Image (tube, rainbow, N blue to C red; front, side, top):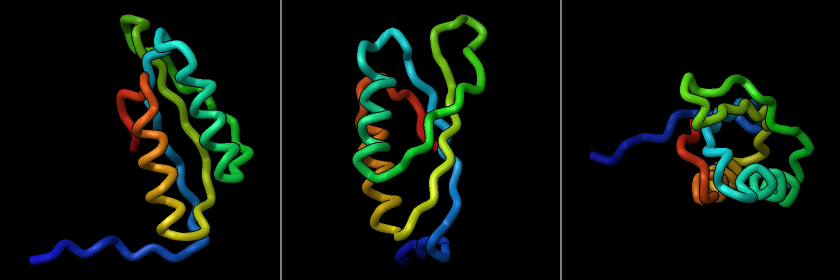
Length: 87
């Protein structure tokens, strides 16, 4: 049985949650490049550091214009070296 995708209406407001390893050189900068390439001006807003200080979490507000944009941006962000979690 095929899974159904949740019904979303576009444009859709979305808030990504990213957890990154700040020790990975260029990780944050690469995230900014990807956002800019997709026409997103939002700057990731820091939320908090992990208790051991090894990871940082960010929130990124985005407005998706299509499901294709959502899929492309999600896969590009998830592929960045240093991104540990993307929601």
